[in-house]
Length: 259
Ligand code: SF4
Ligand code: SF4
Image 1 (spheres, protein in one colour):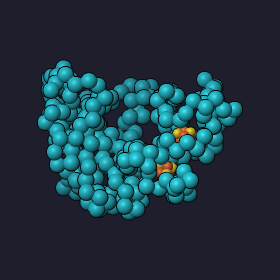
Image 2: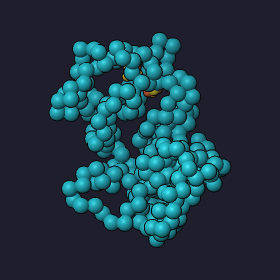
Image 3: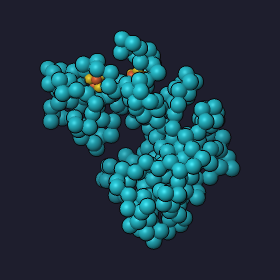
Image 4: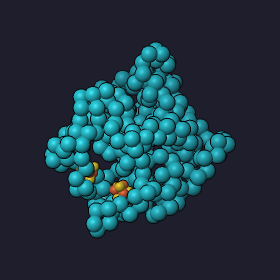
């Protein structure tokens, strides 16, 4: 479906957000004095999917292997630059103070990076008039019309895949072993800025997490049926109500029935 769009420079996408950032962008954000949180989700992965299951292989590409109890899982880690209110880089005239080196996620908005997600205008922050413009955002073939945006989408996917093993080492270095069940919620790990930066810098070295392990993950849910199912599958599972200290919290996407 053809989607028309033109940015109105309203600045809404620079306010009160969690921006997904790559490892290199997270380090730059932390060095600038910003905050980054580590979002973890786990996918039970008893065996690899069929070769033509492209959505599953896309998840595989951006995740790392781990175990929860007796079950193999894949863990997707998202690094989120966080801020309340206006982004610390937003200037009074609503221009970006780090425009040339702004995160890729700022370059692609409101496009979708996941090739299996359809752009949902209602889920975006852009005002109605932005979608009524003459400019073209996406053509009938699903291609992004702006070459810079299209290239940033490709770069984000590449960084996602490249960073997966670095993130595995970051988790091992920081002792992170809890993730929400994918599609139901995420576990948010808020580490002290200097500690997270040091872990990211160390994790660039492939030998950095020697002695660390990606075993012993616990899958968190706020739903009774999910917890029962996970336990019957052999995982170690934790109720969301048991999570909520030491900088760890649970963010559920579905209504809780387990509290
Ligand atoms: S880095 Fe720049 S473009 Fe990105 S949210 Fe902040 S002000 Fe907006
Ligand atoms: S919310 Fe949309 S229209 Fe507003 S500045 Fe961001 S991209 Fe542009």
